[in-house]
Length: 142
Image 1 (cartoon, rainbow, N blue to C red):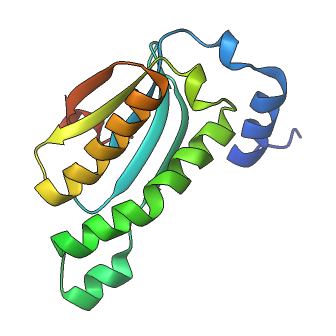
Image 2: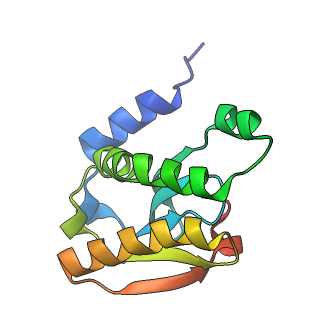
């Protein structure tokens, strides 16, 4: 009976045989920080999720009795770069290999959205690619 492959093994195989050049363009980095989750994904134009990472700290929320906007924004700042690096490593590619960045701008906690928008703007300026503003409701499956 054939053995089923887990996600980690599939990603290792994909990395070995696929290249960022083999994926349908454009390829976009998505950033979602509208509330308590920090979510990053790299997607292709044919709606394939090439890599994604999400982080949320439920223990902090329990400690504060719910979502504390200031603490949530600090959490976004502390992990957003590592999540982006992890996604780039999964594909594998560099930020300059991507064609753009998309970021949620509403609805959400302004202080949390600001973290994602600031990071997206810095990446867009660094690599000179366009930024697309998206309603965070459309990004939730990421």
